[in-house]
Image (cartoon, rainbow, N blue to C red):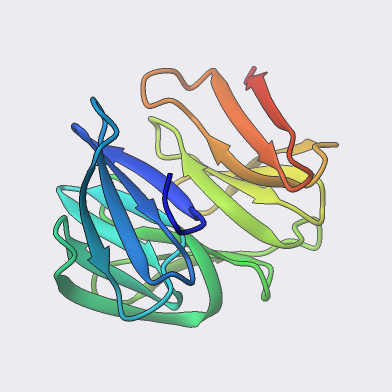
Length: 193
């Protein structure tokens, strides 16, 4: 239990990283004992988290902040406001959703936008995840669907009639299953066929 409201969780080895949104802190727990190992204060509110090559990426509304696993800032990438989710693919591209603009974009480490996806059938994109093939899954909270894109940002398919999907998680070792958490508090485990 913490004094903060958790925003996002990611795991790296024996450590669990929890962003605390407006609390401007990232808490690190032991995955074995769940004891707090350390807390890292941030200059901005941090929401979505991902870890790649022992570096922590944090979506901070108007930037994606890259830091080491002790919270020391390495670099900040500017993005349009309303970015609270980020994932990092195999090519080190940051894929992030902008819920106000209804877009999902990929940016490389030189801050170049690699692609931007938008569709009239995607409203309030929020949670994003990738599978082992680097396909990108995007929850459309207000469009009640999940869009699946290739790693190049090309639409592959849309799963319809999913009530207010907020977050999605796919196990790293099984692309056939996903967990979808909805804005109304429901959690659903789905088989992807």
